[in-house]
Each structure stands twice: as structure tokens, then as C-alpha cells.
Amino acid sequence: MTTVVAVRKGSQVVIAADTLVTFGDTRLSHAQEDNRKVFEVDDAGRRSLFAASGSVAHFPALRHALAAIGKDDLKLRSRDEIYRTFTKLHPLLKESFFLQTKEDEHDPYESSQFSLMLANATGIYGVYSYREVFEFKQFWSIGSGRSFALGAMHAVYAKARSAREVADAGIAAGCEFDRNSAGPADVLTLKLKVSP
Image (cartoon, rainbow, N blue to C red; front, side):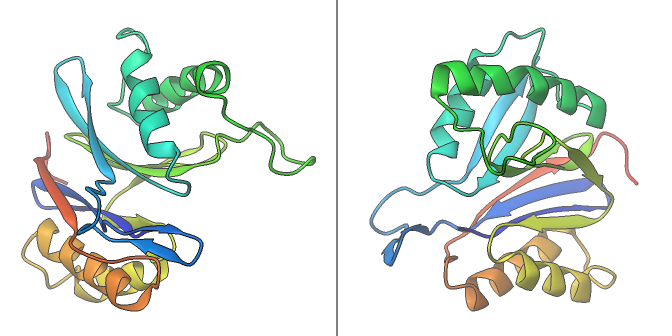
């Protein structure tokens, strides 16, 4: 698992992720492999940053699927655009990347099997397994270290001078207390189009 955080404060958005990969009881640290969980997608000349939690297989599949989707279908500037993009992405993940969609026989929809954070100039978003999209006003976290990260970010948000300061607190807490998260962290910052 992992710790991924996204923060919106002032005129900035920040996304950060730890760099540890685990395989059962085996830990593959950043010193052993270039474990980058944050990746960039070009949405019509605009930059969006993604980080996922869950299986390591999600990272190359999502990167390649997002690169393969038609430019007219890759829109990431609002909750509705993100929802439409991931609805179009789901069949591509199934057909070309062999996504296993079954979780439970009573599921209301096919699962995409991932949770991810997205940050761009319009804000910070979470996308979950049934393609539900949330837009967060201040901060959010996913992964096995999310509870620690959320608590730390909540504690510092009001007093912090920047989104980066809040994200650093969240990642530090996740890496300190979650056995499946470790530094160093990848931290990327973008400028918001409009300050909140």
C-alpha cells in the first residue's frame, strides 16, 4: 500500500506520495528501485498529476491507458469531466490491460479496482473504484497511511503557511506510522487557476 496526499491552500495545490513498494512481507525501498508513484498526464497542454494506491500493476496500466485514450476524451478540469474520462477509460482498462473488475457479486457497478488522487490547476480530486469522483476543498489522502496523514494534515492546516507544509506533515505521519509507507516522498506543486 502507500500514503498519498493532496492539498489545496492559497494559490497552490500539492500532491505527494511515499516511495515504498511492498510485496507481501518484502519491502522494496526507493534505494533499491526508482519507485515513483506520482505521474504526469498532459490534458490538452495542461498538466495533471496522478498518484494511485493499491496494486503496483495500476501504475503502468493507468499511465499507458491515459496516454492511449483519445485527446478528445481526456478531460480533467472538473468533477464531471473526470467522471466522463474515467467512464471511457474503464473499457480500455478491461480490454487492453486485462483489468479484473469483479469484487463482490452484489456490487452496483464494475470496479476499476483502484483509488487515486488527481491534482491540477482546478483543484484536487479523488477517483475511486466505481469511478466516483470527489473534489476536495482543503486536503485528502488515500492508501494504507491515510488515517495518519489525514490526522496530521487536519492538525496543521489552519496554521500552515502553504499547501506544501500541510502535505509534508501528512506524508511524514504516514511514513512514520504506516508499515507500508516510507520516504523519501515525491512532492509536486502546481499553481491554482483561481485561489479558493
